[in-house]
Image 1: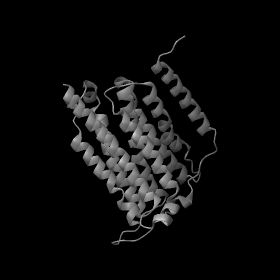
Image 2: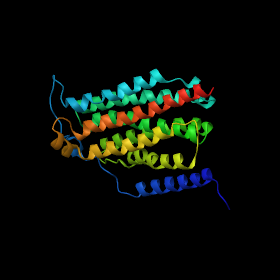
Image 3: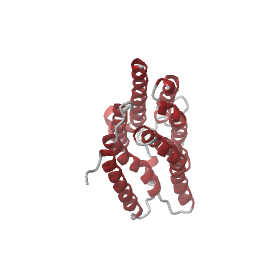
Image 4: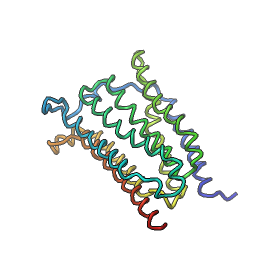
Length: 260
């Protein structure tokens, strides 16, 4: 039996999803490491603790404003108009990331970390829904959008409740954050859409990986550069990746106008 690329992609996505869920759920509960809050750059500036980790989040606000100013679904394909609200919700979630992360870095602890992670999961889930709409099915994206948001936000609420009960468990949050990052490349490879921002999504994935590396080597980067830490760079790199994606959306709109 000869399978089409979308059919093969759907099978692979199903396999990766099932294996990912089984792998994470068979692990023992993952506790939040208390040392996570000990960031390399804790400098006080203008009365603001952890100044650079706090204010580097302004990059997300700038990206969100850029996205809203450049957004015009009416200049593209009809399906763009149908999922207008998904893009707008995604941009709003990006702006909320700045508020949540900025609040967390003012006084890093498990309580404030909840408000950091909540908008991040919202942004992850909404981005995934947008990609499903563009490449797979608008109808499917509309169906899964709200359940995805509920699962994403629920993963953070579950972790917070587990913290309150003295049995910290990050497994669901880990699954929500990383499983879409495995599925998205499969969608980009096996499903095609000439009108989509294909390059922008690959750039976003690349910058996401780079941001995670910056986060991991927070202290080493701070020791090397002295003026900025790895965690502050993580915010800037992640925001830059989103900016590249928005830029690719803009090019898509300009190309659609030129072809009309």
